[in-house]
Image (cartoon, rainbow, N blue to C red; front, side, top):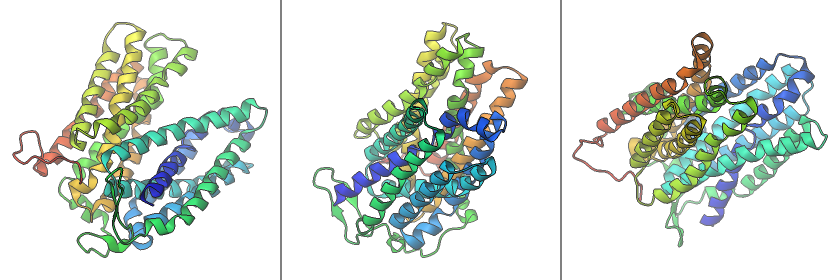
Length: 413
């Protein structure tokens, strides 16, 4: 039963990734149909992001009331309905309206599932689960591309993904008894412990959700939130601007740059697969520091004047460096802030990450437009420095800094 639930969670993470890159792959076909500027995709993106931020901040309240299984099932259902709504939309306004439930559903399921895995499974599963997300994010555009090259419209691409989400929703509702199991069971092969995810599970007996002010007052919480914010700044700025940097600063053709920019995502996906094995020997803190070090190597490679080959190596290193940081920050949340506070802190952490995703790539756009795209590596370096400083400051507050006497493995038993 434990392994069956883990398989369902893996499928849920693939499903989470499926729609994430759909808008970008379909928009060149969509915007002409709606007679809007190409830049209007940013409006839809911002609406979705706003919904994810709101639902992430409410994740503690929702999960305590309904349990992880129900929140996940209803959230995926909400996302599936929104995707189907996209597929039948006949106007840009309709897309904007359907973007609201899309964002609300995505934020809730993301925060709830990540916290559940952080509480009940080892770090390697967190890495592999986010690798599954990368597979889903890669398959989504492939499905859309196959639909478009097959002579059908973008609507069918969204419809196919919505049907896949509906099938997952049915599976999640059927699996609800697995989520609400009240007795702890231990998997004979993995040694992972799974216990109930219902609201009454709390370790310290806290019955009410924490307010945002109470969450921020938890020692080290602010530092980790800003660290997560800066991680998203590095990841998403690289995702959006790597291609432009290769074209306008390194002199590549637009066609070549479009393909080579994907090396970053290959690095992330492959890195998360490999990270799952490294976590057997390294703690979450060590994995985060390792990732930060590899990101630094990637930035240095971008800055070196050795031609496009070194820049491509830099993008791969950036992906490999980003790979362990996101899963390790999430998995370390219960260890850093307590099991009883983890869902509340998780929601706010992820809200900060979404804010970084929305805000910081456009900020670099202003820099690139007003100064030069050549500042791309320095912008990433700024994010890395702040991320590292905030993470180490949080560890220092917890007595786990480099020079602290107390040594903690960072790997929950």
